[in-house]
Length: 327
Ligand code: UDP
Image 1 (cartoon, rainbow, N blue to C red):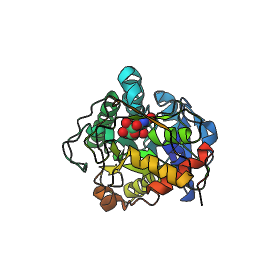
Image 2 (image 1 turned 60 degrees about the horizontal axis):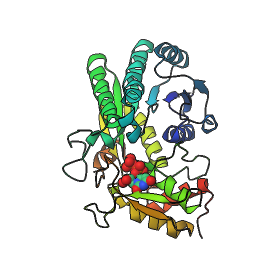
Image 3 (image 1 turned 45 degrees about the vertical axis):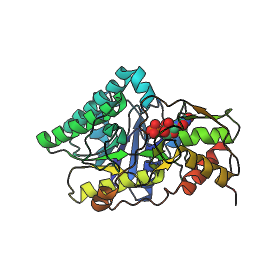
Image 4 (image 1 turned 120 degrees about the vertical axis):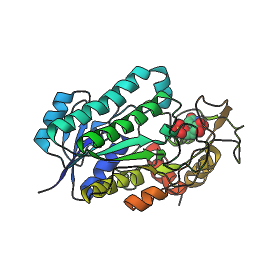
């Protein structure tokens, strides 16, 4: 019979793309989501269960009934800025939520977890690129909650034999290459969707947060990785656990940094619409440059990005903003 995978947060941006790829691999994604930020219409590749990860009883009952081979745990709050203003929401959803999930797993007897972590756990790294051995010193509540959850996974693994892969995402972006899913956060704070909204004339302009950084063009540098590449890494992580692979925490990035201005130039070129901008002061908590050393994910999971060139990222993302790519 078909193996089921419980996908918490599977109605969200990365979770929905992952559910689609699980289905393409012959696995059945069971989406468990409270729809606080997810979209019901993004759940199309398997059953939907409306539930909150904080509800340990409902979660344990769901796991007992569904008997998933593994759990992919996306459900979390994910805005850095909001985490500074509302830390309690982040400690509750991300720390208590993961604790609830781990206890439900113990009760219901699931021993494989794939966890959404973040490069925000590294804070402002002393050295680039960021390898997994880089000290994790997060500078905001969001990064701290993801780091605490990683520690919980390691401690549950030591105590109870839980098996896990923690995936430290760099900057997720882009949309399903087949156009069935996209990025729709509310509010939308991320660079590429906001820049596309500005290019489409749906917001007045894009605010560029700082052009006086110590980078080649003065704007921040990030490692942009296509959501379908991230999604694929979860399939690979599941296969790693099935073949008895070690518990690991790995970076998911390309190894290449792009500046804000490079992104805007790519949008101009790919869509034929220029992005109106205003230069603003730096945004609090933004490190100048972040990019991954991607070697461990390749060595352990066989991960290599296929869609993460800037042109493909922008082309796939642009469809959702009423912008067709130019031929
Ligand atoms: N950024 C920007 N204007 C925006 C949104 C983001 O200049 O409206 C910059 C931000 O300062 C950062 C980069 O774009 O350097 C990526 O920001 P995003 O919020 O997309 O992701 P983050 O790196 O914060 O996870």
